[in-house]
Length: 406
Image (cartoon, rainbow, N blue to C red):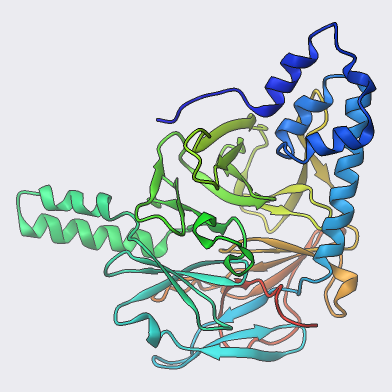
């Protein structure tokens, strides 16, 4: 479907095999400039294999990236909770559970008529799907700005038009709507559109077709979705420094790079396997989240147990693997049916360190789970407790608030 070509790191390694060149003598500054044009972490790993000096340069670069990332994360706020209206016609509310107060409220009237379903949140933007037209919108609840995107999955729904009878077509549509309204979808932006120099290059990646959990993506300036058929049964998506990472039900991990420029000479899309299934049993739910230090974490819920296990992806090793993390230290993770996030807990009084906050609300406009609430899992003593503070309305999902003032 897509063209194949060697990556930058592969070409560099091919050049380094020339015995007439003293690549190990390149200065740290030069190596640092080269690393600026490579992708963490996969190309970094290949780069570090060339020689000891290059391996040291990669470790230094990662240390700098993590330090800068941690300073950047201090500007981030603890995510807010999107609370459901108590009655039809009520306004939606973004709630600060630490302060115990509403930050802002809004309605969806400006989206137009129809039934809109919250499918997720990423970089402070809400992602909504129309259950009538299958159109997708990004909605900023703070500014009220709306970004319209073309319909998703309409091609699958249109299969019903080939049915022999109207009743078959209606039944297919009802089944399709039921599955999409109860399924768990992942939606992740490559960056905040407000921070982009060119919004048309911002990418939204989602899982679609809930019974297969395949992947699709679109640049905000495009008129059609790009459907990726190589993967299915996807559990979660994360985006770190512009590179997407995906995990399926087996625990296999992949990287997906979308070319953000419009240069036809560059490969438009590249999917790579980065880790085979780990083989851990009894997993039920999986999440991926970036830590404040820039590490990629995988969180697994054990089947029939209220217990969560955290793993960190170990890149710079010949034995690339998920390694269990038994203590998160001064970190809190926020997981749910939206773009997962993390914060340094000590930056926010009232936020519990070494904990996982789980929003078990339903993002659906018509279905709610019986256990809809927010729970806190303590990684050290392995206990799961309801959020200490009372929520005035049922929660739906986390909404990042990194652009709010402290």
